[in-house]
Image (spheres, protein in one colour):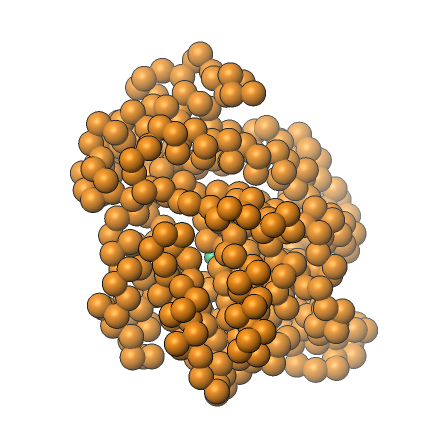
Length: 378
Ligand SMILES: *Cc1c(COP(=O)(O)O)cnc(C)c1O
């Protein structure tokens, strides 16, 4: 298996991008062209067969009961909160270390985001810290399967039951990841996905998906994203326009055919990185998790020097994310400031995302690791 990853053409000086979207697109070009042309010819740009087809196919691959495409991963969370009737006066628990888009929808619906510290080992929600933040107003928790590493869903659901909370799983980075053999997103009340271009499954623009096991919630969600209607000009309630474009649905449907293979390759590449970078703190999936590694994140004490060296060698890298939520200017309004979350604040000064994409060759992984090891300090 691994020898297939070797390409003898990889030379020492060639550039290694952080993510290689052009390579992915090239591998699917004829099919993408055909499906896009079909949409253009049909002029069925809003709703229609391409959207229905992708809605079904994503659900099939993900194992949920009900699901529908939507405009993006952030609005997916907004819609989920609306479906669960969360609004002014309510508090929602979210991890302090995640993309800002996890938090915005909570504010959008008028509720209050309550930040939770992460643990030192798995870098996910610390459930003891979470319990200390529960009040009479707490209505929901948003576990985030960040980097494609599943949160411990048995523990999450037990926590939610104990405190009477609803659960929205933010699966923006975790398409087809599993917890104890079962797909993430099928545990909570609602799950949300992003198809931002660089995500594990990416559109050619913005797109997202909302999944639920609950028929009643789905009935609301499906109408909410389409102006609160069931019939064309009969609007039963005030929703909005959060629909998935037909063009994006067609593109996503082509890429979906590769998603399981890409996820497997991500696990394989991460295993190799892990072996090569022994001695450094890297992402650690829990024992019952089947991760899908959205990114490959390693921690170093001399990040600036490592980044400069990698860049000088033509190797891309990034930081996901350089600022914790409590340190974001926007969170000042909620009384948050620097120094309140020592574990996540320290982590974001140490994390570095190395080049990582399913089309990456073993030689590329080895070259990144070699250059990284020349400079990096744990
Ligand atoms: C990408 C992302 C989002 C937001 O998705 P968009 O489609 O960009 O709106 C939310 N949460 C997490 C964890 C993400 O990675």
